[in-house]
Length: 484
Image (cartoon, rainbow, N blue to C red; front, side):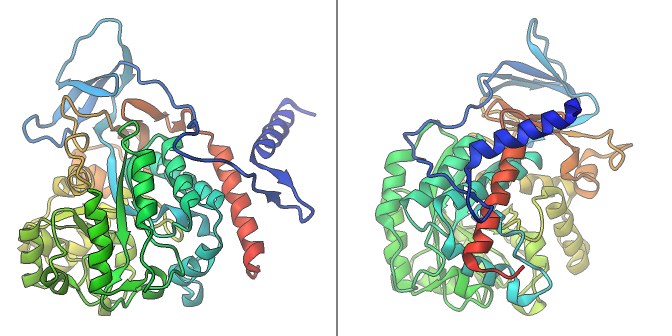
């Protein structure tokens, strides 16, 4: 037996022993794991002092600007200095030559709990599309399923350069499910908002669990400052896409639930995936700067003026939205920007496509050029802002992240420009939007902790995350009696 064979068997044996026990069916039973705010989180790398040296620096801060060659100094998770040259003795150097140094991507709407559904969802078969599969299988989720699914999605996020996520958790089936998703976010060491929502299959006339929301706020917030809390609301009015899976509530129910969230000081998010409810919501006094809407497809000029006046933001998920039939609208990025509405970029889900902020920007640009062209100017730099600083503004954390500004937290990525799909680089914004892909992300830093470097995770067990997701998906298939 060779050394490599011994190593592989030992690794697999160790991973299985950590994950559970083998049942008579041959599947690994999920262990009963206690996850709560009080339980210890996974070990994370330390926040060391370091200097990123010699990168092409994009700060996203108009008062600082960009540097063709520059340095970024970080200490205790805080950005200390940014400039063409920062001289410091006896400081760890992270080599940035041949790389773009920029703020990490901020994903403002992602159903992380559905990452586990990849083996079941088909983009080309309506009966097993995203909505019917998530509605059916979501009702079978255990808290451990939720934890493993969110961990799988967050590992992909870090590998794609995403340092902040808005975890749109619209399958909170119990307090334990909420704790499981929050534990995954804590264990991944990522920045993000947990949007507490209803459960799949929940009757539309059943109020959401505001007591549970208050409990999460009490137990989990503020913690270490990385995680924040909000609620996600079921839709209002007709929902032509995913209505059964997402739920639809009346204005009176929305007033009750949104009022409960606002009493707790929490922001609110909601899909608009059918005839636009914006005028109806405004007439009911529901709109304000604490509201984020998702999927901007059917707004009118009057409604866009309302959104601007009320300070409402819109998250666009271009990959999924581009797949929708034209009858449910088009991505209105140009119209929203022209009206002065806050817009941000999101993934939505990763069941039948992957987390790729670069492709998201690329699709937005292509569709904008196809529909509008130069009538409403859209630059490559504006798209990168959309994926970084605008996301921070959307989630209300622009004072913490979204730009490489001294005093902000160090959420930073390095993107290699020497890879075959990137080199030789001219304009760096053009390269990011038109050429880059997640495999070009060399280093991901969250709150001053290096989570990936040279394309490899640090203090995150990639094989274990994958194995546990495979086990959970196999068990879910058996539980659902899903056809093979």
